[in-house]
Image (cartoon, rainbow, N blue to C red; front, side, top):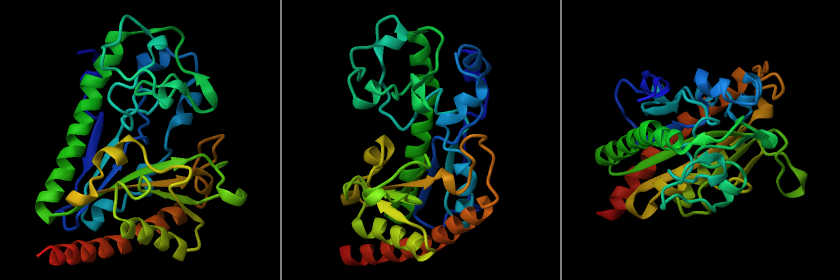
Length: 293
């Protein structure tokens, strides 16, 4: 195994003292540990490579373990490997050698340069100086992507077994220039794949909690949820998955990537919403179980 993959700490789970609520949190894009070989092989400087990060989202949602829920977070960066994609969404133009026949080479995300191994960071800035060996892409998938999803799946299964119900909260950030209908800038977007990855009450309650604090909240547009939300959300089986997008302009300077003075205020607001939501989900799960008896 290549040295870049052999070190511990590619991702970790922040565990509660004991899991007391049927929630699992996931932060797949906040990693900021850039492998040296990756940086040296890029045509971009280290600062530009960071433009694909969901900056500090792991810190914004750090209240999760204290509420009694585990939180999985990536340390590897999204520009290196995107686990919110199918395992083999790969652009053949990026690689020397033949991709396996099961690779998805024609998805919209691949076309946009944002496959499992991204070709670009924000604003279509090309990452690599030259083509990568196919073996490099497959090694990242085998040694990082698959273990990451195995761990996430395990957390969801354990939660479902313990409570008979689980809600995955997939945590992300979005660029500050995002606008919705009427030119309104949303502070948060809650995605449930248009009601297919989670019960409507679960997403509507999360919207209301953020709105109660005065935030502008949209649902599903323009972000309804990615591969993780779609893949793990099975509401008919009591497996729900939601995506939360936080507007970066609220808490980070998108040019310097420094935290804004309002960072702790936004963090505190998220923590309050999560605490209220945890209480709601506990009751919702209990009521659902009673209704099924």
